[in-house]
Image 1: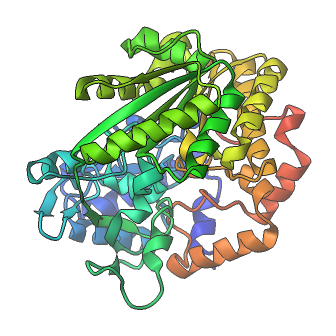
Image 2: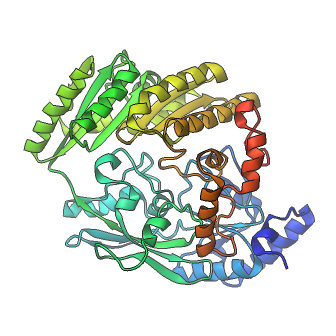
Image 3: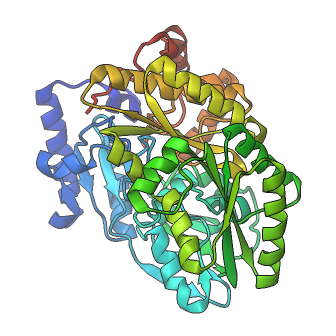
Length: 502
């Protein structure tokens, strides 16, 4: 008898696929209200991709459960029928992690949007996975508290998606990623069991499976509730905006600030193409003559901030800053940050399409990587804007291209793979916070050995023995890596040739 995951991967004729869909939909109709199930093409098309819209597949159906019990029933049916499940949050992910599986369903947690409790004494919030990142801080604001991880998409992305990808944001250098700010996760396994990872206490007995769950990209269990840490809102905050006539000097300044013992609340960098695009979009007051600008934020008591601003300014000048501006009000501080937070939509104004990468390098390698990217622009004949979390070396190059030109899209993909593999070469990794998904699965072959990938699969098997939860994401098989070795993208061949595009 075939393994359920193997059955799901079998190529079906159109007639057999239609029959399979009828079987799955009929089974789901028996346990879900009509408004919690979508299966007509016009209804499922919005779920064919996430924020990486270049890769698309239609699911057999989309379920929108409203209770944990409904999630359990969906899982039990899919387990019995051997149907893969892709858990989905707001769909803002940028690595294809929520792209549907062939012959599978999408399980959307969009209706799990209740803030269960805000405990101002314990400084915690219990929320459902469909709650938006920013909504947590809005709910905690009356108590003088907030939730620290703040991805650029925080107005739309959900906490469940943040848990899946271990999201960060501009303030992750000082306050940590999602994994450092989540205390407990409640989830439904592929067996239909309800399990909890972590606890409300500072520590919990046994293996640290909470850290394994965070960043698992929906491959281990389906999150139904999350308990997050809240922290007091700082009394004050200021931003230093420094201009540099050379991106390498800016990268060296980042390393200099950390080496001096300062851990800024935020440490972000943008190159000239990025600042120009952003300035035209939001008018943040950026220096358009600078080759790069650095945003350095200090927060805390007024005395702490004043001292840290003086120290950071001295380091910036030592490393060749040509211009320094310090925010004079909260409105101006937010204005400085608005530019960085709107870098992605700003790219959308100047190019039909953009491809956002997500590699990480040691801070000392920021300058060398930017120099290599400049060479790649000439090689692939495409423009690139660079914005990044400079403090932890998390780079977000935005490759600009026209998706209606297939040759440009091929070159953009090759450009992106080249960047990721250069990150590995420089001592970094292929992802910092966007996840692997389908986008970077080939690059995992470059970073990790067969033995390491086998260890990853062993963990996956422990959580999901049948391989039905997001099975084609995150971890490449040995056969995929062997094939990638033969068809290396830098040779000009298209990765993921089996996937429909645009």
